[in-house]
Length: 498
Image (tube, rainbow, N blue to C red; front, side, top):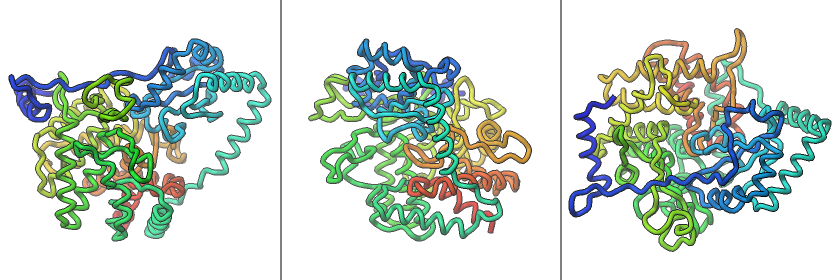
């Protein structure tokens, strides 16, 4: 926990980040607090038993999305629509930034996503933004479908056959080797060549294999996506850059910072050092906030808020861009890992925020490696463990390796370990091999296990990493240009096996 004197020092450090008025008072950080839920009585994802054989309407939202707020105010607050939703479904709302695994499984590529699924969480149908009349008609069609049990059973049987046919067979553990690595690399290059936008961690994978080209770098570090404060937006809406998604997230910028720092280290190129330093400064300057616990990194900036935006006044009122000031532990862990990589090449982190965040992450776990007073996903455990291993590499005197090891052991037992003797590892809904708004949890977990195997000389960790790769590499070939963390772990594993 934080000592009072440490908190005093941290508060002093933040004055330069948050800005001061002429009288010395700290500038108030604007907060983005509105949650776009409308008047529907939403339930929690974990409470599937409450569905009572009704289909589930899963609403995946992002509080920084204009269209989520529009859906909430125009559609999800319409009394007739709300009545139909309650009559036909068990409604569940989930913040997609908190549960990227659910967005990976049920999302329709954008916010909002509305997925209709059965009580066993199998897909039925779904839609993106939709007006009141159309959503009402959709609810009535779903109701008719559920009123004819034989039709629903036929659809479920067809769905199960398709899922079984499309699920690749896991690899034997003894063939996860250089041949598999070459196959995965070929898949990545093919998909990037077909204009699939790669993830930041795919750049690291390609660079370490000596196969990184300028077009791939330009796709990821598109200067048209940088705002006036030096942060990268999530993406362009039009290819010419006229329209862009103004959402600035910590996780996206932390991934770009870490990649830039690694590329600067390996290439010795001053341009990469300059880019990494600029990103490091922007993240600290813009996303550095504090609460009663101490300093941390905010989740991001609200989307679609620009001086000439017609959306800004209707959503957030006049003034500066609101900060989504939530503490998201795994995103802060990403920022810590990125900062460590930057510091290792001699870049200047202007505050000790990364060190404070590390203490706060550690304080979130007990001596067994279990989270304290909060829910945890596999991505939380993997990214936080990786951050602790990274800081331990920079300062081994803090004893963070042992904490990371306990977190990883518990995560394996909780989320991944076989259900019984001889069974294969579980591949549940909380797992993702793809990099979307953060590195894929499976790849980061495998990376951490390989690093632990080397640092502790314990072959059990290497075996666990091999089991993960044997299951998830075949599953990820069709979207390998977004599986950078998995590809990086595969490269490490092949090196480990040699």
